[in-house]
Each structure stands twice: as C-alpha cells, then as structure tokens.
Length: 370
Image (cartoon, rainbow, N blue to C red; front, top):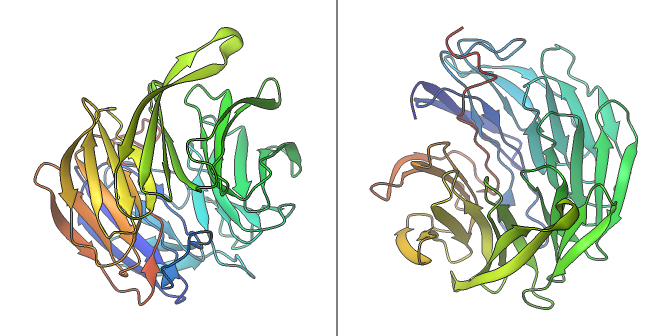
C-alpha cells in the first residue's frame, strides 16, 4: 500500500468517523449492511470504508487532497477530517454502497430502497431511486463498464437495472431470502446464495437459472466469492464450512462446477469468504471472532488473525493481497499485515458494531500522477 488513504466508518449510532493513513494509490467507498438474516449478535450497525489516492486526481468531488464517501452517505475531506457534504438517504439504514468504475455514480441500498447519486454534483438528493424490492436489499454491484447494476434482496429476488433508465430490466426469483450475489468475472452470469442453502447460477443471455448447487440443505449460504481468473467458486455457510468448486467453461459460455474441496473453516458461522486477487489465498471471517487465511495450494491454514472480540462480519484484500481490512461488531475495523499476521491499525469510535467494509486500492481510472 503506498500514498494517502482514508478510512470512513458509519452506522446505526448516526455518527460518521474518519481517519487517514499513508497507504496506497486509490479510491473506494464502502457501504453498510443491516446484518439481518443471521441470528445471535445484537450489536449491529453499518460502516463505510473509503480509500483515496493522494496522487491520483479524480474529477468532481474526488480531487487531489482526498475526499471520501461515508454512510448517510457523507463526503469527507481527507486531510482535515471535515465532513463537507451529506447525501440524503431518508427513511432507511444504508446496507450497502457501491461506486461505478468510472467513479461518477454511487449507489446506496437500504430497506428496501436503492438510490443513485451523482458524485460530481453538489445536489444532496439522489438522481435516481429504485423502490420495487419488497424487503431489505442485501447485495449490490455493477457491471464492469457501469452499464447495469444488480441487486439481491430478502424478498427472494435478484434484479438487473439498466443504468440509463429507472426501471428493472430483468428479474430472477430465488424462492428464499437472498443473502449474497456475485457477478462472474466474464460478466455473463450472476451467482446467488440464499437462506435455504441454495446457490444458483443465472445465465444472463438465456435469462434463466443454468445451474443449482446445494452444499447443505437448509443451511444458509452466507457468502460467495469467485476467483478473478474465473477458476474457482467458494461458498461459506452458517455451519462454519466453506465449499470450493473448480469452475469449468462449458458450451454456450455456461459454467459448470466440479467439487474440489470441503473445508471446515470455523466452529461458528462463516460470515464472509474472499479469494485474494492473486488467487493464492482464501480469507474467512466468523462468529467465533477470528479471521483465518488459507493457502489454496493444499487448503492448509496459513494463519489465524486474532484480536477482534466479537463477530467478524466482513473482510477485503488490498489489490496486492498483502493487507486485509476486517469489520467486526466489537465496534472496530482493523488493518492486518498478512506477512506478519499483526493488526497494524485499529479503527474505533463507534458504539455499535461494524459489519461491512470495502476497499479499492487500484489506480483510479489510469490517471495516476495527474
């Protein structure tokens, strides 16, 4: 990680906190999750992480000197820590927050609203609002060119939204509360997990489910991750287990999945699983308060990251896979150096739990050094 970086957190206590460190050359916002759908930990709030490049100039509010989006959502000035802009979300908590690759549009999802904001504008109101989900929106993401957005909800639906229009472009029914959705790196398939333990692959060309996996019947799938080279799919669930499949391309560009390994990762719920950008490691976070790093070569445990005192809900790798950020309901976020296994920074200040984090420390739009 290399120049100035900002971390912003926010949550159900209606506070937004911001700190900066000297890290990498990039930008990212992250969002909030209600934490619904998993029993047990009652101190749940949402958080927002954001990264900004010190030496990358981003148009609009993303300028050299550092600005960042936070829950509410609000924008912070990195050097002074002053909140100078707050966006209106209104009648719901923010569960998740995503920014398009061109850094022009930010989407925030709550219960059940999805709202899009123009980052370069001073208008605090959303430019578009989508309200057709019937329950909590638990997953959100963009196609790599920003042409469309996908969402998943506890109403059992996965929806695709054309970014040029306000209506839903396509809808898929999971028949159970959707807990997680990921986009295949080749952009042609969505993969969803639900509270009944089903994993479904949705062929976007055919407009239908092309494959269904059920690793454990009636055990909720908590998280999905796909390797950036499309070689692996990993699912984690509430029994503490991770299931790994080798992804094989079939005819008509569909993906077939060959069981590769079953990993008993934790004694408690595995709340997040995440493959590293170099596809060498798997990170898992759990209700047992630990984070584990697994080597994909042999699926052996590399190290356990201990330090959180409550459930660890989320994690994200740096682009070079050297660092990991984690979020916990112990009211802290931590930055881990994976070479030593040490938490090199602890971010505290919230009086309710932190449950979501996101990070993008890649060069912003190729304008490094402008």
